[in-house]
Amino acid sequence: MMLTRFFANPWASWADLPSPFMGTGLFDDLFHDSWTAPSVGAPQLAIDETESEIVVRADLPGFSQDDLSISVEGDSLIIKGKRGTKIPENYRVLLEERAAMNFTHRLSLSRPIDFDQADATLLNGVLTLRLPIHESARPKQISVKGGGES
Amino acid sequence: MTTALTKTNGHGEKKLHYWASAPVDVLEGGEEYLILADIPGVTKDKINISYADVEVKIQAIRDERAPVLEYRRSFTVGDNVDPDAVSAELEQGVLKVRLPKLEKAKTRTIPIRAA
Image (cartoon, rainbow over all chains, first blue to last red; front, side, top):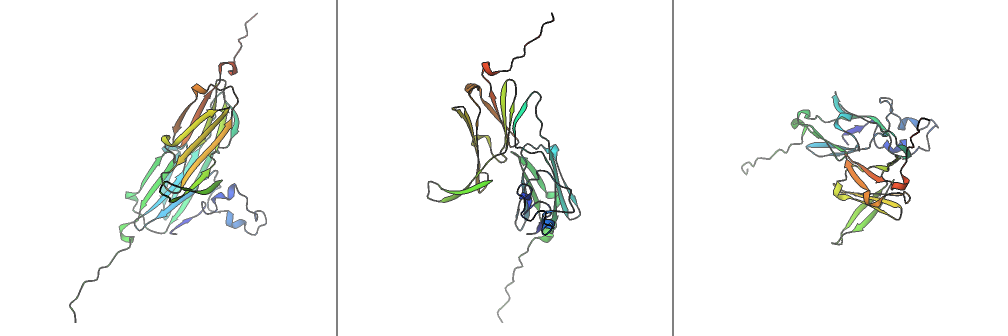
């Protein structure tokens, strides 16, 4: 795995599934990230990597483009998002499961990305971020030239 | 929480298929009930909503890539919903189902006349 997922995975689900070690002080550090402010309802990221690109996907139902910001700081890719739950006027809540989301994902990129070619789309509540790996860092095949038989 | 099972398609191949419970908000207004469900990745042709026997069932299939995920929820809403007027819309991965109340169940505001 070339990307280090700082806050997100594989512990993203700890927020709704308390660790049996929580509070004992033994393993608390595994579940906390001192670099990132606590996020609320952070989506899990699915990250696929090929020789030519890294694809990051996140489920972000109800988000519009304006609710998201994607930026690059040094070797880090930062995805920020915020979704408020707006209850329309004159309605009362009978059941509320859709949590407010306010999160920051910081991904450490260990391969150079060609950000000029990077592309983000938001379709049906799914963010797909395509990060092409810079030409200089892609694996190259070196062909062996046939020489004369000696 | 998701549960995995394998389904066999017509060609005898086993396909991994997951069930998931979509998070929902249920709201009540004077004229209608409103169900909001997070179903990211689902297109509107893959959603099935039914209302029968005072129960609303929502089923949505997400199959844009493997593994296939099936969202399922059902709610008992009582018999004060007009079944012919139920409508739904999908916006950015959020399904909004409107269940208008029957005339007798609507909230009425009684004006107070000045004496």
